[in-house]
Amino acid sequence: MQALYARIDRTLEEQPSWQPPPGFGERVGRQGLAVRRSTPSTVGGRVRLEPGDFFGPVTLGAVTAVLSMVVLRDPDPLAVAWVSAALALGLSGWLTWRTLRA
Amino acid sequence: MDDNEQALVDEVLSGDQAAAARLVNDYARMVGTVIWRATGDDGVVEDLAQETFLRVFRALAYFDSRGKLSTWIYTIAHRVAIDHLRRCSRRREEALPDQPEFHGGFAADLPTPEDELAQEEMGALVRREMARLPETYRLALQYTAMEELDGRTVAAMMGIPPGTLKTHVFRGKKMLKEKILYAMQTRSERTGS
Image (cartoon, rainbow over all chains, first blue to last red; front, side, top):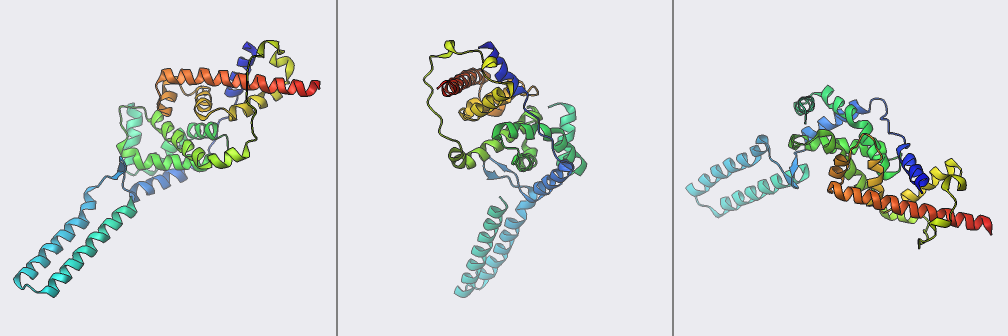
């Protein structure tokens, strides 16, 4: 039995190691950096936002404020409809962009 | 994580391409070997090793520097291999021939393995029966046989306590031994009849 155990151990230990092909490190390193730049990191399945990611919502908020002021000065159902449409479009666009990046 | 590893991580995070290549080169051999041992398929190792490193780069900024970088990378390699095995599990089950049930209780009557089979045959038998072990036992045996990996690293990779790993190794070896003895007995019965 000891001989069998020794043979099992020897077979397990004798298995070869993998050798990366030439240029593997450079190629994968380059791809890894590109992936790091283009994909936001996720923590617990949620996208972790970086400072630059707030540009979209901040712009959207500013546009909303300006449009709201225009509407409040001259209440017009058509203007309210346009503002609502623009807000909905902007918000859904930003959410879609975030989801695609994740 | 030691200072050299921290410096390497910092350089990669700053976008240094040479550092990124160095990170991959430092760990590629072990990552590929872990994947090879886990999947048993050298045809998929390069792709899965690449996938491992892409996951490493994505998550590197959030790596907990209190741990060892190597253990963290090998854990990702193990998970990539497991994901691959799960994806291929149906195909794998279809490819493997049905194995007979082992009922045990005859080991003492058998001749010694060295007498029974030539060395190459024995190695092939061990490898074949190893592939048929339950995944947890097989991986515990495969990883602990790698001299570069200590027990704590393997336990961390597999997400189990070190004591559980020892149990898996013990049970895996016992099961493997029984399967081999059964295969040998079947063979000798065939030869005798």
